[in-house]
Structures are given as structure tokens and as C-alpha cells.
Length: 144
Image 1 (cartoon, helix red, strand yellow):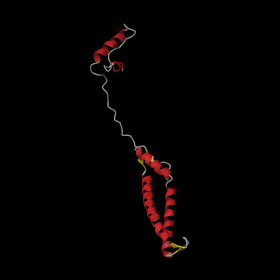
Image 2: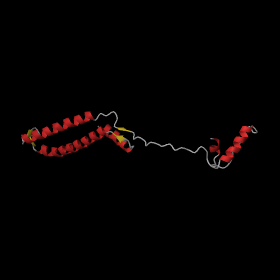
Image 3: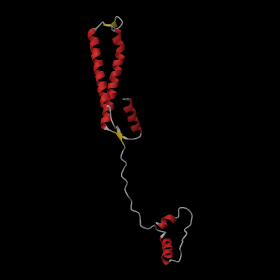
Image 4: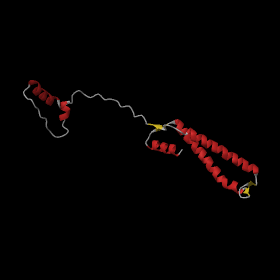
């Protein structure tokens, strides 16, 4: 059960979507854990009711009822342990859809430069063309 809790907390911290059946199981486990805590606190009172070194009860009916409660809780815990064997406890949260934005076929301001470069290539005057300039002016954009 500790492994399921650890896997649950890791998935929760990573922002994954926890399956509903796992969340339901966890809420049942937390409820039973609180009930077992109450039974544990009541155990000291029940031990005080025993005599002869814990072999005989002063109030048989009370001891019997307490034993039945403990037995039922143990069965419930065993059932929860069996039910808690999940192969997967969470899934990745789906990413929001990305809309494509259409780009303009040419960028304004580069048309005249593109025409000059294209003319040089088409006319065959030059075999190599060098483009230079400071970064961010659109040299790469001009080629595409």
C-alpha cells in the first residue's frame, strides 16, 4: 500500500491526472485509517478490562464486541490492499491543442532585396552570393 501512496503523490506532484477509481480507493483507505486509529486508541482501555495477565476478561460481552470490530477492520484492510493493486494510477494531462497561424508568403521590406538576389541567380552572373549583416535583419528569412 505504501507503494501506491508514493506513486500517487509523485503523479500528483507532476500534475498528472489521477484516475477516479484510484481517488475513490484512496478516500476509502483514509477513512479506514482513521477508524483503525480510533480502535488503536481504544485498545488500551480494553487491555485494562482484562485480568489474570490478559487471559481473562472482566466483561466478556465488551471484549467480544471489540474483537468483532477488530476482525471486521482487518478484513476491510485486507480487501483494500487487494483492491489497491493498480497497474497505473495516473495519466498525463493532455496538452491543449495548438492552432496553426498562417504566415504571410513574403515579409514586407525584404521583397526588393530578394528580387536583387533572385535576378543575380537567374541571370547566371554570379556563382556564389554572400549575404552579410548584423544579426536579426532577416538573412535566413530571405533564403526561405
